[in-house]
Image 1 (cartoon, rainbow, N blue to C red):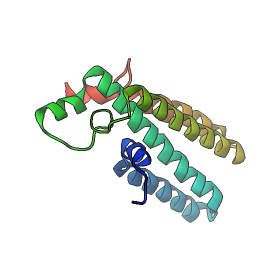
Image 2: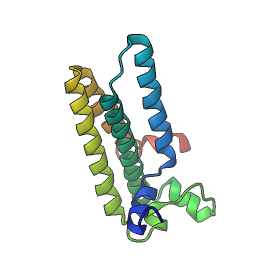
Image 3: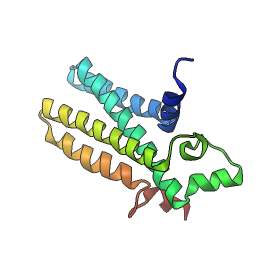
Image 4: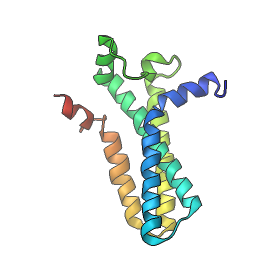
Amino acid sequence: MLISPPLRKWFTAMNPKTLTATATSATVGALTAYYLLGAFNVVRYVLTVIGVMLAQAGVNMVSDYYDYGSGGADLAYARSGIRHRVLPIIDLGGLSSRTMMIGGYSLIGIAALIGLYLGLVVNVYVVAVLIITGGAVLGISYSAPPLKLRYRGHR
């Protein structure tokens, strides 16, 4: 096996299917910037892709934590027999809800540091504001109280 069982649990908990869409969005953004501005920096591109993927993985894990704690949609799917994906806290032994929360917030924090670095390097402070408001606050508020945006469409 390429990935050891403990690492495989973490990788599965990050919901890797969603990460390809995130990487694709960053790539389209980089290609658009290259087309419009004629500039491309490989290091910044790689850091951007890593940062957005870490942020998405962190939000996925935090979402699972809050969903599990509130008995939300994923638990309802599991109880009904409808399985749309692996539910890390339920299906992967050794990953507690607390572990998911800490891991998710840690990934979001690392992603924010990458974003802040990129914002400072390109001297665009709006990037830092977007990371904090759009990325962190809305990403976490997707499942976390008080907003629980994820559940607004289920009612």
